[in-house]
Image (cartoon, rainbow, N blue to C red; front, top):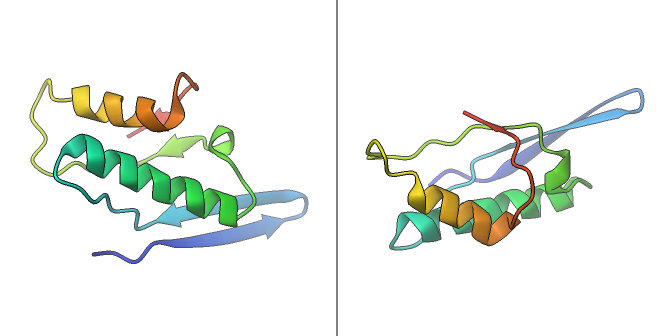
Length: 89
C-alpha cells in the first residue's frame, strides 16, 4: 500500500499542495472511495486547505467497468455532499 504524503510549495503568497498516495480500504468500491477521500481531506487539512481549494483530482479505479460510475458517485457524494467537484481525470 502506498504511503500518503503531501508536498507544500509556497511561492510568494501562493501555496500549492500536492497530495498523493491515498488508497481506499473496504470491501466495496464505495467504501474504498469514501476512505480514500477521507484521507485526501485529512491531508488537505494538515496543509491548511479544504476541499473547495482543490482544482483537479486524478483517480485510478482498478477493474473499472464501463457504466460502473455509480459507486464512485455515491462515495464522493457521501463525503462531499452537493459541493461542486473539481476536474477529475
